[in-house]
Length: 240
Image (cartoon, rainbow, N blue to C red; front, side):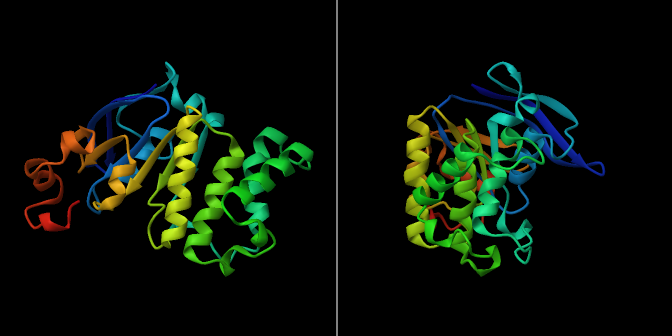
């Protein structure tokens, strides 16, 4: 079980996240929803120790999550990546095996096999030698999904993976998420989509600086929660 208790973050004295608590069972696909500036990325980064929290605990299987980073795969927003960096698709995916292989050591047969299988699974095997800046948005996201698969992590975080991608990539990603869930893995996805894709999630967190609501879509999607999270200007007809 993943457990977050009373997690708070301040940026230069300004609250970015206040008292967030929730639990997630293994084998779950969790959507993190909220408007721009709601603290969604901050929540994930605080959980992983990438930003400093002012208070709170994050446990995974009853142990501090930050002591189990070898169990985690994290894919940031694509806007944070230097796409001009001279590295190929296969090299990016192979980075998933750097720690297990050992720094400075050449990847062995098992690592190469994991990378090949991951690229095949996301339909990117023919792009392995392509420089990452030559890829479309959907291809870039599939590459990072392949890297996540190659880590063999049990807890995976994706920050807005469906932004600017094609429908085929979205379908591939949800298919793989379903397979990962069946294997007992837990996936947390930051998303802006309030439409049809919500049916794919087992559990939703509605966030705006604080946790507005948590539960299934049927449990939390009501006018009061949506207005509290997104404001009165939300067009309710656009919400699935």
